[in-house]
Image 1 (cartoon, protein in one colour):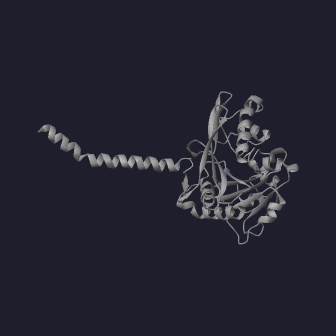
Image 2 (image 1 turned 135 degrees about the vertical axis):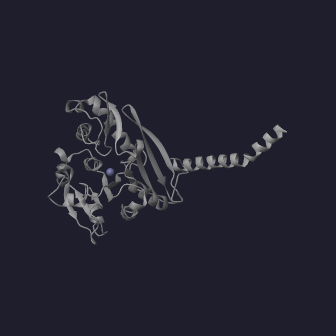
Image 3 (image 1 turned 60 degrees about the vertical axis):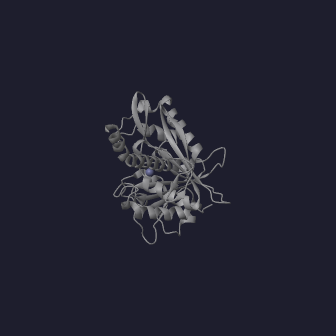
Length: 314
Ligand SMILES: [Zn+2]
C-alpha cells in the first residue's frame, strides 16, 4: 500500500519534472542562439557568427566575426566594434546587416568592459582596444592612470618585452578586421558610443574652448549637420573623398588631418590614426548612449541611419 502511494505520489510530480526539463532544454536552446554560432539570430533574422580566440599576453580575447551575404551580394568593408561597453552601436550594426548584409567584427571583453586586461611587469593592467595600433599609442596606453586598473611606469612602458604582446594582438586583430589573405578589406567602419556631457562631442572637434586639445590637432575641417543634430552624434572620416560623399546626408562631419600631421600626441594609437598611416579608408560612426535598453533606442535608430548611409559607399 505504501509502495503504491509512493508511486502515485511520484507520478504526481512527473508533469512538473517534464515541464522543468522542457524549460531547461528551451532555455539552453535560447542561450545557444544568443551565443556566437552559424545559427545566431538578431531581431528574427539570421546573422551567422564565427568565434575566434586571440592571445593578448597571458590572456585570451574572443573576437566574433558576423557575416551575412545576401544572394549575389559582394561587400567592400568591415564594421568594427572594439569597445564592448558600447552596446547601442553593436546592436545597431547587427540589426542593419542581418537585413541588408555586411560584415562585423566584435571584440568581446569580460563583463562587457571597455578595457581588456593582461599581466605585464608583474601587474594586471588594462588596455584600451582603440589605442594600441601604433607603438606610440601602446606606450601611452600602458601608462594610463585614469582607468581604475594598475598601469606601467614610463620606464616599463618603453620596454619591447611589454610592448610586443600588445602590438601582436593589435596586428592579429587587424588581420581579422581586414580579412587579410582573403578579401583584404581596405575600408573599415568603426562604430562607437559616448556619454552625454562627456569630452567627446562634435563641438570638441569644431571649437577651440576644448577639453581635448589632441582632437583639434587631429581635425582638418568640420561640417555642421542640417538640420542640427545632437552634438554627441557625429561621423569622422579619414579622406576628403569620404567627407564629400557624406556631406549632404545630414550628419555632423569631421575630417581627420592627413597622415603627415599625425605626429606627437596626435598619434594616439587609435584605429583612425592607424588607418591614415596605412592608407585605409576609415569612418567612425559615433552616437550618444551605450546600452541596448529602451532609453538608448532613439540613438540606436540614429546610428542605424548612419550605417545605412555608409553601407552602399564604395
Ligand atoms: Zn568607443
